[in-house]
Length: 138
Ligand code: GCU
Image (cartoon, rainbow, N blue to C red; front, side):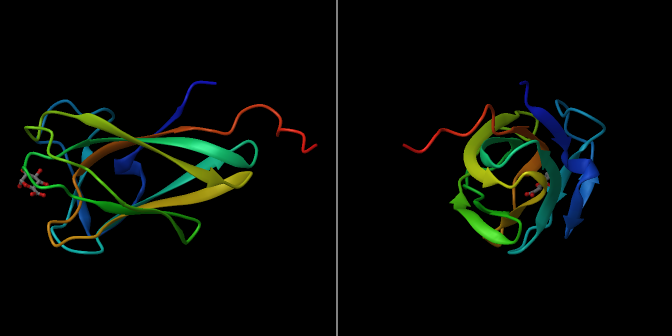
């Protein structure tokens, strides 16, 4: 199945602003995380079945400093300090992919800045949900 796209500007934002002053975003804008530890965006995503899902964050970081974020799923840390390196310009958007386990149904995926620089600008999260039937355990 194609990944499902979740726009950051439609997610739940803690200490950040929806902006549109740097071109190249999809949807109506992107989230500018406040420059502080703990600023966050929480996406509500749906998975048809439980299992491993591929997450792809579309982001820009116009600085030369990595802006890592913790990725939590349903309140539990899933990926510790996922790196979001500089992309060269605030108008240059790149993707960062990781894998997490989702429950069947609704899941909360939260990306939280871990340094005082805050997160990168985040445009979108694409979720490729678990596919197929689970492997049979012999
Ligand atoms: C600049 C840029 C913002 C960005 C910010 C930051 O102000 O215009 O889009 O979010 O830097 O450093 O986080």
